[in-house]
Length: 525
Image (cartoon, rainbow, N blue to C red):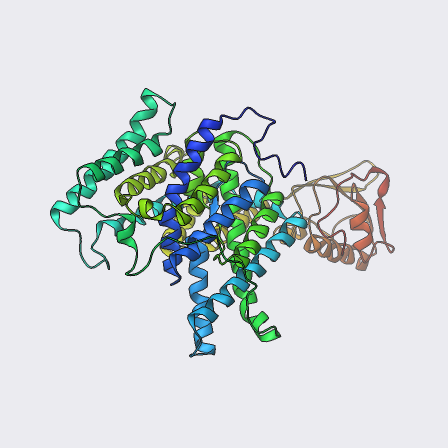
């Protein structure tokens, strides 16, 4: 347990002042987003705030990426909208409290699935996400963060823009916030510029009694962020297969979306901090946090890229900042709700605008003309899906699939054979390039079975037999030589492949003495 309880990362020098102030800034930024995400699914603001507290605290202590912030997220909230619709179709008279119990149960099951993912050490599969997908993912998120701030410039209900004086005031305060965040680090880095901007803008609004939108103004009538410690309770849903099958698909999506967002955010923070996080440990921490979130009246969540970037841009690198953010969020809920509700939204909108600007990969434009067309396509597709569908998991999945298909197509064309006949009349085929499902057809065309001499050597020293499609291609090829009564020698072919070849004990001579140590993907079939 010692490695999990190393809260302050004593292996590296920690700037406690930076960590605490950054944590306070993040806590302030968490409030409006947690409230907004809870409202997306039609929950009370406290359901989102409790989730942000539990998720933030647990992942900060036990997670695999110090400095990364987790909480209630929009991607997870949207999934619950589908669950609520299905529950109402199944039981039109279901009460809001009963719906919440199903939501909490779904969050707990999603946490269990995430822990299983981490225990099985499947976090390594995040390496399959190409850089072009990361570009598209990050750019799409930046645009979403930017666009998500615009409702604050509209009248409540989104029917019309604020009246001209209010709109000008709002815009001016937002610009002032952005100016402070941009300019203060050029003067001094002794104090986080984001927190300074929030304090200055809030002070101006309060001292001069400026008529502008506050956090309280974003809440529905009768709602508040004031509450107590998150209440504990085991979800009370019918313990039967029908309930399990109802929540399982949504729990799986919550688990998948949460892990994809968290592991991609982890990679992004790794690049920024020039350090390396632990994906499997983060998966277990995310799962544990979701289980506890469901038990303590929270809607679950995952890593938050916006708040994580606020934290790292403030210079926070240890676990302490995340712990402070979670604890201060609870303090706001229990004791400081009246003050927090008076914070001007302009200060938080300006902060999130700067986060969006800092998140966007502007370097992607510099290399746009130098990137392969396939990478440009992947980047654009992932960005568009992220922006218009708000489905990050689908965007990443489609990006990976397109990249994989392009890679397979390119490699399918690269297989070739160098042919010659030696002084003994034996024909040699030296194979170059990977043999896999995409290249098997081209591979078969390389051989002239009918006109070849009675003895043939096929050398795989510069090739790799990758999958079962390749094994089957070898079987078909050797069967063709077998029908012609010709002897085939397979050199530098692994023992794994030899075991899977149907004709290996007939007319095929496999040179095991020179086998490399590599194995095919299907070696355990």
